[in-house]
Each structure stands twice: as C-alpha cells, then as structure tokens.
Image (cartoon, rainbow, N blue to C red; front, side):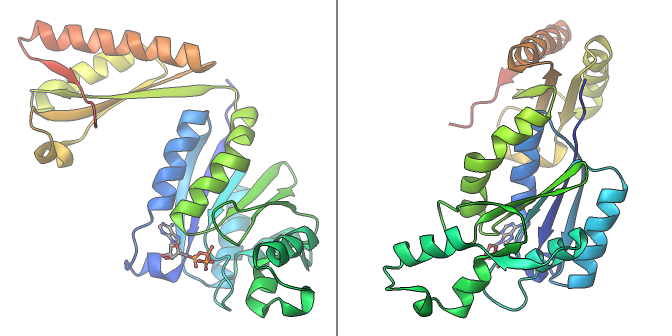
Amino acid sequence: MNEVPVEIFAIGTELVIGRIADTNSQWLSSRIAELGGEVRRITILADDLEQIVGAFKDSLTRGTRLLLVSGGLGPTPDDLTIEAVARVLGCAVEVDEATLQDYIRRRNLSGRDQLTPGLMKMATVPAGAEVCPNPAGWAPCTICRAGDATIIVLPGPPREMEAVFQMHVAERVAALSGHKSAALRVVVNMFESEVSPLLQEVMGRYPGTYLKAYVAMREAFEHGLPLDVVATGADATAANDLLQQAVTMLSELVTARGKKMEYYNPE
Ligand code: ATP
C-alpha cells in the first residue's frame, strides 16, 4: 500500500501553555486517517520563529510527505507561520493579488489604499505558493512544494480550518494516498482486561484493523466500555468490508462469553 507519512503542526503559544486545547490536530488526524494518510507525529509549537522553522526542517528530514499546519496566520506580529514556511523553502514572501482583490470586494473598499496592514499581512504568502480562499474567514490556505513534500498551512480558528480543509485539502490527501479507512464505535458490557484478548484476536485475524478500548471514557457510557474498530483497505469499499468482518468477529467473540456488544449511536 502507498503510505503517505503525514505530520500535523499546531501553532500558538496559547496552546503550549494550556489555555486552549489543540482540537484542530485531533480533528485533522481523524480526517487524515479516514482519507488514508498516515499521521506519524503531532507537534504543538509556541509562536517562536526559530522553533517553528526547526520543527518543519526536522519533519522534512524524517521523510514526511505532507506537513499540515494550523494557526499563526493572523494579522498580529506574533503570527509567524508564513515567514517560517518561506524560511524553510528559502524563498521570499509576497502579497497575493487575488486575495487582496477578494478583500476589497468583501469589505466593499474603493481600492488598495484602503486595505489595513493587518489585511495586507494576511494576504502575504510564500512566493510561488498556491493560494486557496478561506470560505469562513480571512487568512487563506497556502500550499507549497518542498521537494517531494507538500506544506499546507490552514487558518487557526477551528471553524475556518475545517471549512478550508474540506474545500481545498481533503481531495489532495485522498489522491496522494493509496488506501482508505473506516471506523465504528461499539460498547461492550465487559472489563478492559476481559475484552483486550478479544481485540488482539480480531487484529491478529484481520491485518489492517486496529481495535482500541477507552477506559477513561467508561463513565460517559451507560452500557459499559466503548471501543473503536478501525479498518484500512485499498478503497472505501474494501475498508468498509474489512470493518464489517472485524466487527462481526468481535460480536461473536463477545457473545460467546455471555456478554453483549451494542453499536454506539451518538444521536
Ligand atoms: P486569526 O488570527 O486570523 O484569528 P490565525 O490563523 O492566526 O487566525 P490563531 O491566531 O493562531 O489563528 O488562532 C485563532 C483562534 O483559533 C484563536 O481563538 C485560537 O485559540 C484558535 N486556535 C488556533 N489554533 C487552534 C488549535 N490548534 N485548536 C483549537 N483552536 C485553535
């Protein structure tokens, strides 16, 4: 299978000091897994140019094919992601004309001279980057090539990051990747120690599956222990077929021990 090593970076001092939880990386990693990319590492970084540049360079050295970065695209001086990407690529930064025109239109401005320094900063991208408009905010998504790798920078606000990802990034990840994944959550009325050997048995019988029980989430579930079954296949159909086989085997193993397995429906 064609593995696409992916690393995710969340940029923002508020994240490393624990004021805001890094929900972007969790959301992105679950989407990447569905789309068949292989997330190898998630890094949270402060708004520090040297640290950001160093982290991107190290990631490229590890052979990462896709670096997905969120945050640090705002109008203020501590927003450094674009500068960091330009440093890594060894290129200049430039103002993207199409983005400026878009701002003029959306703000109903009479011309360029009415654009604030903040808007000019948010329209600034690494020279030669592909620039994709942000349907839910101002800072656009930028896509740059770095040798064999691609660096994609997404806005930090979760709603914007998700909208930009769906619109401009998801298809690219799917196209890069040679496989897809499918997942299902179920709940069993068993202890972790009882169910663990069954999970190992299913993973042993069906390579390409990953089963994981969540003890820490037990209180939130009335009927017992929640667990995920994840399956990877050559395409979505293969992933779903494998998922069904793995879930069926798990259900049979659970029932054979006089216990119950229920599908978890979040609605
Ligand atoms: P802007 O400054 O234009 O809002 P930005 O791309 O610079 O956009 P940040 O300044 O980094 O983004 O963050 C904007 C908002 O999004 C803040 O409220 C921030 O806490 C939140 N945010 C940023 N990164 C994350 C993340 N990884 N997970 C959850 N929230 C985040």
